[in-house]
Every structure is written in C-alpha cells, then in structure tokens.
Image (tube, rainbow, N blue to C red; front, side, top):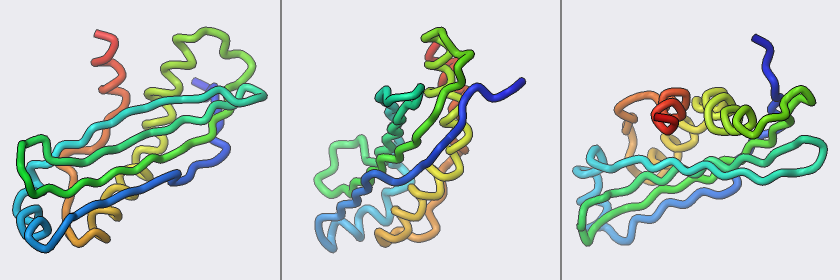
Length: 140
C-alpha cells in the first residue's frame, strides 16, 4: 500500500512542566506512576493540500491531590496529502492514525525527556502509544 501523505516537517510547538514547590516534587516522585496520559489531536487546513496536525499530550494526576505536577507537549506535524485522497474519512484516518503512528516515537521521546528534565528521571510509560488501536476503538 502506497502512503497517501508526506510529512514535510515536525516540531515541538509548546511544552510545559510545572512542579509548584519542593513538597510537591517529593510527593510527585512517589506518585508519578499513577499519572494518566491524555491525548488530543486537532488539525488545521493549510494551502496546497497541506495540514497542520497538533498532537497534545497531557500527563497529569487525575486524583484530587493538592500536590501535583503537570506536563504538556504540543507536537506539530506538517502533512501534505496526495491528490488522490478526496474523502473526509480517509483524511481523518491519515491524521488520527497513520501520521500519529509514524511520529509516535518522537512523541514518546519528547514526553519522557520533558519528565526526565523536570526532575523525574527513569520514568517509563506503561505501554507504547498505539494510535491505530485508539483510532479503531474510536470507530466502535
């Protein structure tokens, strides 16, 4: 199967990490394994069949703790869709599954580096980011 898109560029548009104080840092070091990852994807049409795709990763504590850290990355990808792609459903799959699967290693590396550089070294995600699986679950 021939790819129906080309990634023209990718970059970190924004990244944020917040740990309020020392007490929070010490608390979070023990709690970070309980944090959850939220993923949001939005896109914006550009000219010449190009699309800007923003993948937003938020890694945060969902519990009602006063002491919590917050990590967020907005990873932007510039994608050009081939002329043969006409249907909205096909473009949706390219944006939500195909492109995400191709950049998933970059996303994971950026997030883990942010967490590591924020003072929480050695943290690993429980499982690999599987955008094809997420896309298929969304359809059902």
